[in-house]
Image (cartoon, rainbow, N blue to C red; front, side, top):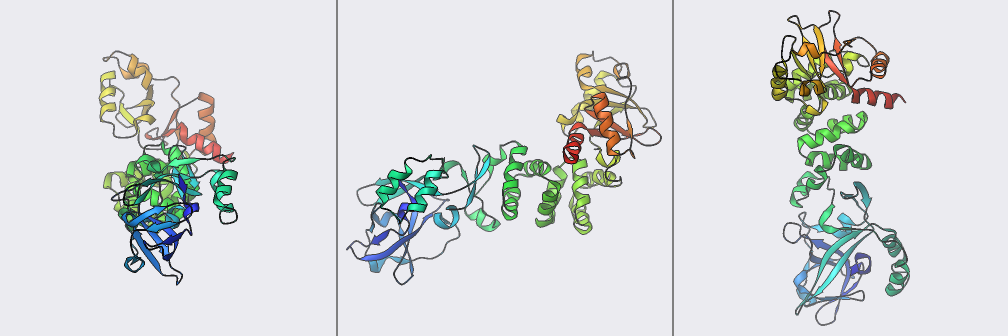
Length: 413
């Protein structure tokens, strides 16, 4: 095992023992061998940069690096955006630790030295984020390397295997070249992704949001503070912003569009699918901080003459978020709310039972112009999971869910 800090500024010699310069960085080609150091970047006494391919490195240790090529044959360094430079792109940079679901800063990189008959290779084992690596960097060049190792062995070490490291690259073109993806991050719960996003800079947030699939990105976006949602949606291409807003629940989409600049909000709506855009426009017509402004229009409604079988059919064709469905709402031919049936009752009843016989009593609803305090009071008084919103004639307009009320209470607290 050898650390990058022990290789930084390492004296480098050619095959004849002539001094070439000091090792200044290590390059990795993620598209070919993502774990292998592909090139050694050396700075000459005249500040010129040279690149030694991995198969031309005869030996490497904490004392010196020796190439198999003559000094005159070592090629000048030509920048390549498809390469990861460990010192420039990894050391001191923030990365995502998917296992512990947090953002961490890299203090060092650990390698395994693999000698062969003709040359020596370095394989990246892990990035080091622990206190031992931080102390090692502070002492490197001050004390002998073996002394530094002795001292740092007393400190806790924390590493992340290189294979599970998620680098963050703000430049979309370079991200593609480096084949950086956030597949492992996408497997986390949206609330965990949101926590990670909040720890990142704005540019790094953009990098992650633009790279995640739309459904995952929208779910994570729903979990971060509104000001951060607005900042991100304002800064990414309008088409991408529209795709994300489409995937959000209509009430949350309406909330964030109200906070965007009128110009951006109009552009996002214009780029959305017509059906989703219309759902959001309906909600934008209601005042903020009222029951109408809090409600969603994703709910299941059936005629009040329907049976259990009809409710099951309605559930099967429902395209919204099933996790938010707790009740079926009954309306008459004038769309007036006449009842609400809990999902649990539907599951337990026989298929030919009339739905209205299972309706909750009393039927609790709230007018669209009621304030947030009234809404919160009803949820608390009746231990509700959902609350239907009606107009002045009792017609069903939408439904408020408990999570929205919880957000309201937390924000006001």
